[in-house]
Length: 110
Image (tube, rainbow, N blue to C red; front, side):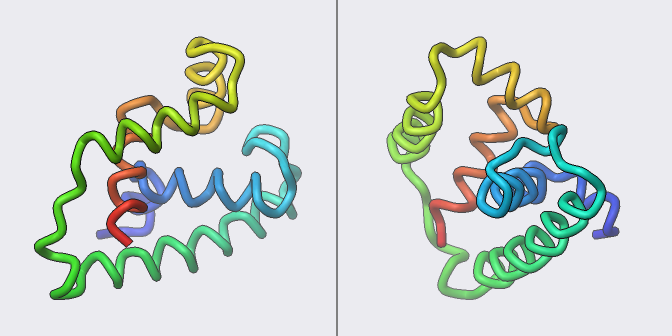
């Protein structure tokens, strides 16, 4: 997988957004170049570690129930006044509901 395809993946975008929120309490669009680069470095590390864990023999047979993904999504949604506000924020950060759910599946597996 090339770096460009990794950076375009739902999982990587999720890690990038998490890095921006954790380090700077800002969405990606609000970061300056230095902050964005720092968020990218953090996302590179956390996404890389997650990828290693998910590629392990132990993780291969894990199945995440859809109820668990729905519960995780509901937690994210609860941070917003309504669903359109979440969708706007997701778009601003290079995600969609489907891509967020994909990322939540990966995160739930580790």
